[in-house]
Image 1 (cartoon, rainbow, N blue to C red):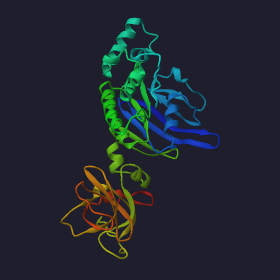
Image 2 (tube, rainbow, N blue to C red):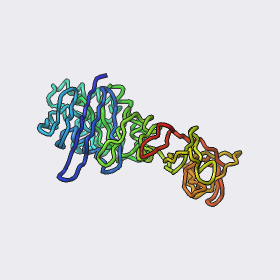
Image 3 (spheres, rainbow, N blue to C red):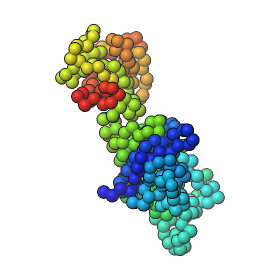
Image 4 (cartoon, rainbow, N blue to C red):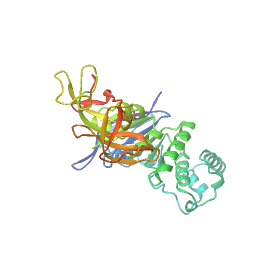
Length: 350
């Protein structure tokens, strides 16, 4: 599959401040990528550099084999075949839905423009709202208008800058899945920026996680969750706790779960990621851990349990299992030793 987007060792600096350092990303034609990370990690700066709004200090950006940005030369944004959906949608309030979608099609004939708009209205399921004004639409409908407007000129890549952040949590995830289906159906290459891992998981084929201006891991959503390369990735992706533990040569977790005292000479100390599903309620278990606190999530409780050495781990239990803080909860352990880290990196032996 051909590479639609290629960033090679990109750096962006503002004076003495480095926003992005040595970032390399490739995105295949028809794939949906995501730049994910906490606030200030450099993900939006990287997206703006791809769009042509930010100059590069080092590296290069190419689209469909054509170099668009280097430190010496930068193709203006309007000359890049890039569509963009902004965080606040940026719809024109004086234009109806049809007019917003047609805005970037002035070079087409009237008939071609009309046909393109009608096609996009059907694509985003807004044909019945073609004459509505932006203020008459729901947040989800406004987002689809912004998407259709960005797709109208048939860009080589679609950039989405936190496009769901203004919507409520339940709608965000549902709409992200809908947008993914729409983009996949039309074989559109896209790159999303978000700080919300649920949006990233719902939309992306490939996620690039950034922290403090640097890429820390690029992988599929599945691999990012199940095979994090560092404690930062493990802690950022999904719920969980990182504890200090010991693993023996057989790959079994010993301290602090199955025996007291110091680990044996053959045991290796490590940082172990424990996710809520790794420790579960088991009425028949003889292993009991004390409840530090609990959080009701509807279908289940998320408990925070105390280990013998005082470290805390999460645990899932059915929503009807109510155990107060200070009492003990019977649990079973399914610890994943491949989520162990030594020296700040994933342990190959575990």
